[in-house]
Image (cartoon, rainbow, N blue to C red; front, side, top):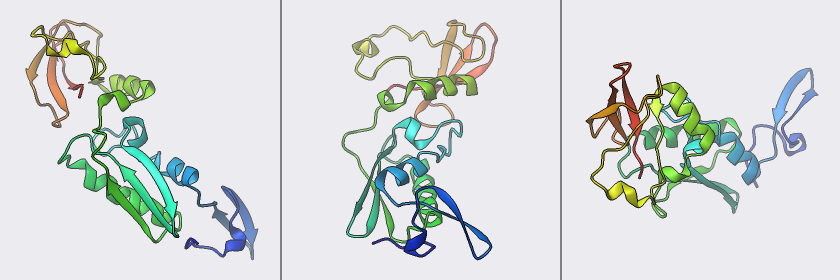
Amino acid sequence: MFKVSQPATLNIELGTIKKNSYLIKAMILSEKNIFDLLSSIPDPEIPVISINDLGILREVLIADGKVKVRITPTYTGCPAMKAIENEIKEKLVEAGVQNGEVELVYSPVWTTDWINDDAKERLRKYGIAPPLLSSRDKNLLSLQPKKIACPHCGSVQTEMISAFGSTACKALYKCKNCLEPFDYFKCH
């Protein structure tokens, strides 16, 4: 069913066995095991969070001896998606999957609601203000400026410098208290 780097008799779940004086690692190729393996891939633009933390990694399917990985871009045209696709293919090959494919899925559209809470805290510690509210929050339509807390000192005395920060999915802010610039991960 799958091409693995070792014979099927070595198909034990996440174990290590000794054969002919060599330590050999093998794993059962299941959708869950492959999803877990790919969950460790860091986002190329924000290495403190993974593609799973961001909600980009949607699904792993195994059918007809093929592995298909479905991912959703943070926005159409995101330049990081090619790097993520390449990293996924590399991880699949390392796991012994020679016939893996990556499919970009555009519906449902990615939203910052898919970023888990632990990842939001890691963003803050990394110096990026996480998205404030749900993308479903109707207050986003008001003309009142957002009170974005500085990830460095916690002050809400901040101002937006540019609607675009280091990437298109972030805005550039400056703290009026500690005077440090920082990115804010925009809600969408």
